[in-house]
Image (cartoon, rainbow, N blue to C red):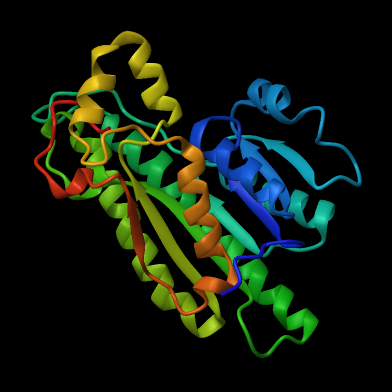
Length: 270
């Protein structure tokens, strides 16, 4: 089974922080060419500025991927830099603050759907079209032509009313993964996801600064007894993106140290 991604071109969103940053670093270390995309230009420059240079394997792209034009510009920038797109990793995520689940006037649900589902779905659709056109130009009529992996959350399958909007957005994203997998299978593009919990995401890291006691609670509520670094999630993303997962599509792999097997703990979303 080959997990090699050497020479592949990958777009990785959310690549300035947490999980997206870890995935981008992991892919680069494994020989991929990486377009690092994020809305936070200052953090992108801080993390990648020294490496993101002409002729190198890393480029950066700053912009709001909720905007259609920004998505088109990202794809064009990637093709201009690396001449192709083989892998897309939707790792950009926004975690909503807790909100009243009975408030019908809150905009949190609209925000979560736009940022955590719609943006990634549109990028996946347009990337898939690029992959299909690319394969046609190259005359590739057999074999896989691309892979899409989206980062989701265990929140999609848990009932925590205080994060109602985030949970709904994650569940919608999971359904988008499955539906796209079926739609794109005839085009030889695989679509999968990873759902995480008890992983040190950027939002969890920020929350622990305000709620230090959550660290112990999360570890205690995880059968494996710890919070995993995002690099462990990156390994699974590589597998799903590689030819080693060539007959895997429409799957959402859970990375949570067993957290989803037991009753929820009192820490929303983590």
